[in-house]
Length: 345
Image 1 (cartoon, rainbow, N blue to C red):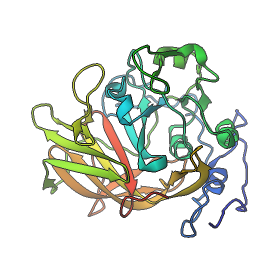
Image 2: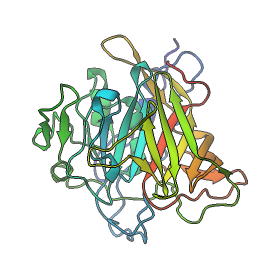
Image 3: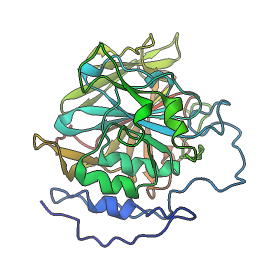
Image 4: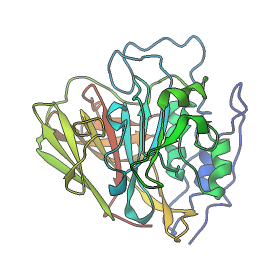
């Protein structure tokens, strides 16, 4: 395995906060099986919007009019059978689905326009999170723990660490589940402990009328080595209803999970230098660069292209003819799958 730890890392102080740029350092921790190249360093610092930045006319995460200046909170949530049904996912603005060890998946739910009463089961962070989060500025980041080798990257990352270790009063255990699937958090309490968390900003999403074309689609299944998630169009609810392993993916609050728009983003997945106690390596999902995507909205599937120039920039999605790929207003799921066959690095 060829390591990229010898890649030169150039740290720059973030304006007013002394936060180190993490893009190059995180690329250096990725390591690969010989094919991957380190992600390019970010062109900025991932700092919050400057004071005086105009309030957007619509929320950049949902296209709606609610919570335009509310702080950004990201929470890691378990996504295996013992964790179902999950709490708080239906209230998220954005739901990322990421591959983790053993070919399973985990969610990162991003909140701003509204908050649920509780969220969970909360689980540990992964290195791919730290590549995704800089585009949000400096959000609050809630998780239950992290591998010891990753702690220094959490400290350097442009996030407010409100993990169980540092913000314990916001977390509680449920008596009806076993450890580690019984840890939950109070989102309002979490944000009280990150009073300077970034406000929402443009992360590349565009909302509006559907583009021309698209293939009428009843359902789509995303696959990982040890997991599947399906999305079936409901004309009645005007959204894609989620399933997990072929079973309806129910929310703890009632109803089924799912979004108005589902982005299936094909991103190269390689081996990071991190692994769990069983020796299974942590995947690194490369979310900078360019690639293909399938965007599901309004009962149709659209072939699309994604592009993200650096880690503190958002991701743009365009149609086959290069026009902006508009999303439907509402919750967006970004489902990250390997660019190729399901792969365990």
